[in-house]
Each structure stands twice: as C-alpha cells, then as structure tokens.
Length: 285
Image 1: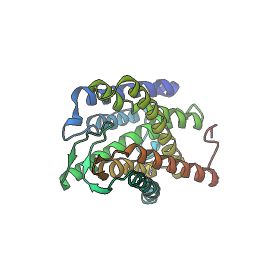
Image 2: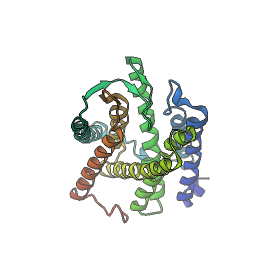
Image 3: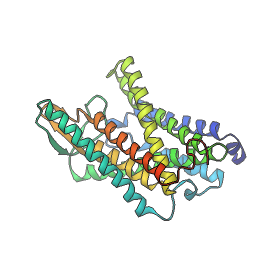
Image 4: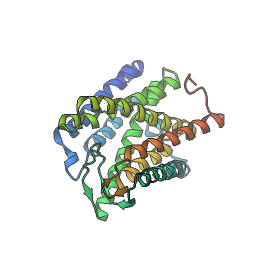
C-alpha cells in the first residue's frame, strides 16, 4: 500500500479527496448538521483528521513531515495573524465606506454565525457559542491545512515539481468549497446559473487562498502561518465580527473577503519573490 500510494501520488490524492468530499457533502446535504449546534465543521473535519492520520501511518510519515513542525510555532502564528489583521482591517474599512456611501447607518456586531451565501445564517450569542466556534474553527484549519497544504502538497511533491504540487492542492481546495453552493442549489435558495457562477468563483478564490497558504508553508517550513491566517478569515471575519446596517447583517461579506484575500495574496507573492526563497515555485525546486 505504501508503494502504491508513492508510485501514484496524484491518483492517490484524488481517491483520498473523493472520500473526504463525499463525507463533507453527506454531512452538509443529508445530515444537515448546519442546522444543529455542531455546524458543518465537525464530522467531516474530524473524519479528515482521522484519514490523514491513517495515510501517514501507511506512508510511515510523521505529522512533522507534512508541516506540523516542533519549532517556529509562535513566530509563524504571529506572521499569519499579522497578515490577516492588516488585510482585513483594509477590507472592513472599504466595506464600511461603500455602505456609508450608499446612505446606510453602519455598525459592528459581535456574535457567532455560520457562513451563508443567502444571508440567512443563524445568530448565536453567549460565550459558550463563541468557545464552540473557536474549537470548531481550530478543527477546521488543522484538517484543511493538514490535508491540502500538508499531505497532498508533500505527497505530490515527491514525484512532481513543487509548482505542480502547489497548484494541484490549490485546485482540490477550490473544488472542496463547491459543496456550499451545491447545498444552496439543492435547497432551492439559488438557481443553476447562480450555482455555476458561485462554483467558478469558489474554485478561483479558494484556489488562490490555497496558493497563498502553500507559499506561506514554503517560506516558514511549517503550516502554522497559513493556519493562523485561515483561522482569522473563518472565525473573526466570517463568524464573529459582523458589519450591521439597518437592512441586514454582512450584506457585503463576499466583498470583504475577496478584498482581504486579494491583498494578502499580493503581499505573500511580493514577499516570496523578494526574500530570495522563490525556488521556482511554479516550475519546481
């Protein structure tokens, strides 16, 4: 089994990915845990962590082999949070300026919600919900970074160029997010045209984020910077800190996220090129 995986790395990743996204889709569309206190970041993410553990045992790899380094944790976490704070400070400011220019009274709200493309996310208040949201988001970033930037990237890199591995895991990460608009399509919240547009947008945006976090992995030699930026994007900018107007909550969330991700992506690309650690990331080591 070890040799089969290593000799067919891309196919192996596709098989693992197919199993993971099947569980993800089953939880979101059949079990509907988004309607429960668990949300959608529990069953499929815990299953994903278990799957990575099993594959690592088969490969005779350790968690450190896929980026969970024993050193550099604090420094890398600070880099990731700094990147996220700066980029989202600018995107929140842009969002508020746009809303005010449209005549809205704008304020902030601190409460937890799940992400929703249709604006009907359930609002929860109380420290208990915040703590649960933190826990589920930690599970989420451990699974997604450990799977896509960790396992898939490192596995494909063993017999392909680093650039190919970077783009491959980012593409899979983009497809991973199609479950959300598919969920809305099945529920009748959006039509097929909207589904197609949102799916393409998700593949592009999430893929770009996958490239950014993959480069952070290469620059820091660990997953922690990407995990911190990923956590901030999900927990602070999506689940906790909301822009509230008299007409609704987070009506321009997608604009906020897109601006922040474009900014942080540009920063990472610039730093990658200027630090001399480019290593032909899009061509190979």
